Image 1 (tube, rainbow, N blue to C red):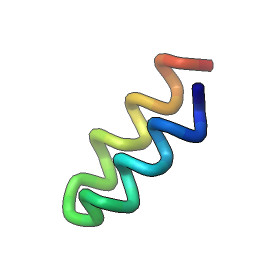
Image 2: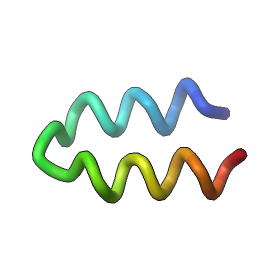
Image 3: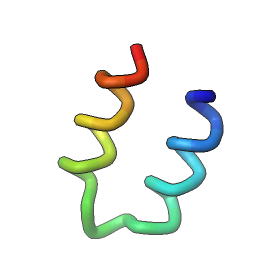
Length: 27
């Protein structure tokens, strides 16, 4: 599941903060 979130994060690039929050949420 982390792979999917990571993929989205890479696509964003500008929203690194939001990506980090999502990753922690999944953890």
